Length: 389
Image 1 (cartoon, rainbow, N blue to C red):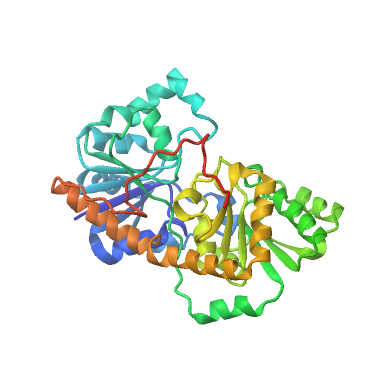
Image 2: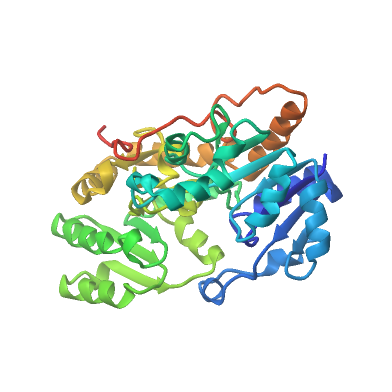
């Protein structure tokens, strides 16, 4: 089987999946990078090391060869890129294609009424509803958007992002249990959709409540100075460490020593790979149900807590519960770890995808029961994913 994955660029979120595919397919796997990684991403700690892998081909350097890969591979895995012309050529030829997509209408499904937008959706998606084209939904609210435009009927599957998975020993848990001060980690760009100010407010309320804690905030961005000023105004600088932009390895170290990871992104967050990373690091998760990863990765009260519709007080209640109930906190952290190492990891996703492609070639589909490549249910964004225990 010849599988080619085309996307804007290979990064630390896509590299483990590609490595897993390469391990199974060898020279029959290729990744086409359509654009160089932006300088802004590199300044945030991202690496270009993935471009050196033997299966990576840059479209802007090897266009003729990449065009042949797109058309001649047994299956094309099409992520986001600015080269819809290449993908469209394959689709018009009726060749097996599996798309990966985040949401179409993050800012509101009312945008689906736009005639110009619908014309484009018809060109890219709707007209192929009866063709051998399938959709991997990178987020729990993606199926709702595509059902709205009547694309991919019965052909949408759960998917996501798969950052590196680490197999830890007992030292991970013993390190957390020996720490008496509750360590809380937050990671991401300090931009409006991530709502980093929630963490400063959390520090104020936890300090007022007499809790013994420390918050680690990894990331930088346009809100950084304002958030730091807020920490000073509310006199919680002693309870928060700001690290600025960090390489992924440093962020993972912070997660490994933390008990709780708080994920505050709103509905504009397509997935949220830091949730995968924190769960793999054994953190008890507190996350907004508005973000794409949360309804699929977290079972409320089992491997984390989902707070309702991005509301701060719901988040505060969830964090307080974990602070007040150490046994439950430890159990959720361990269950979160198992969710990643057992199910939501690159090796499992690659194996399931290759099995699905084989089944499609044979004219049958036997989806997984849960996790990657299971049937994607339709969850309306306005309903969201509630968080009451």
